[in-house]
Image (cartoon, rainbow, N blue to C red):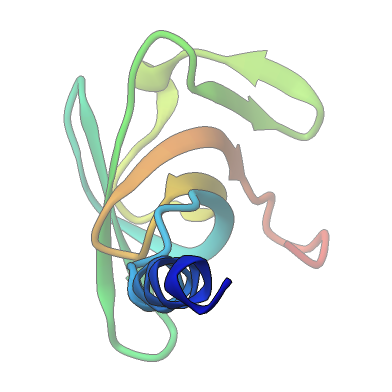
Length: 104
């Protein structure tokens, strides 16, 4: 019985020490610093700059109206929802251009 418990305990210890590979949704908000056909760079209020990858699945809207990726302009305030492991590894799911005067 003890010969079986040692390998099981070792396997449990190794699995517990392995890195978490879970992806998650990470919100980002700030001002657009740069935008290309495939990336969106946002300067956040804390001084960090985050670059999100964009693709055909990225949804863009302003005031409830659906827009195109090309409608995002430098200097606009935005809120984005990224999917990834950290701020350095995000794909933009949703980008909302906030309308001045509407609490965005």
